[in-house]
Length: 172
Image (cartoon, rainbow, N blue to C red; front, side):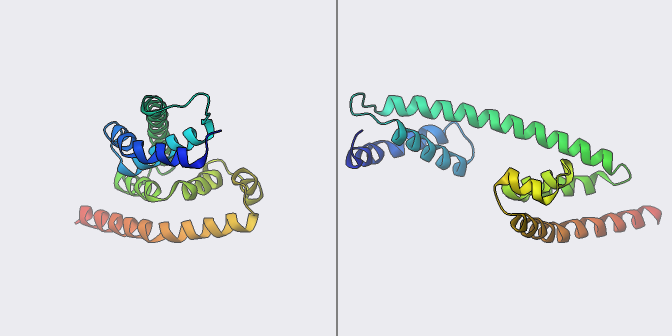
């Protein structure tokens, strides 16, 4: 194992270069910063004084992380398309604007909050099973679910009000 000071030197020397490398390939600055830190976390775990690595190794690791990010985005895009289709089927009498509002509201939530909603409403799991999946207490599941619902309620109420006005305008 290399000592901490050698890793700190590696980090200081190459952090900006790796970050710029990733930023040029990933459009989201926050994601690029996260991927950069992931790259150095991997470097920390794999460090070996007999086989030191430098910038080329970090770039190769960053490329792998970027490829994973692209795959994750593709999967997430497919998931959102599936969710939109599912919501449209469930709310066939709703306007496209209302469906779009629901999907946009869901997208605005942090992933951990969306996960609670998906497990509750799409997978139809009880809170006790969601607690096992997410590694938290049942009480924490209920707390998170109630907070997410409270955040969604005003967004959906506003969309419903807009839909009511739209229908009223159409009847005039």
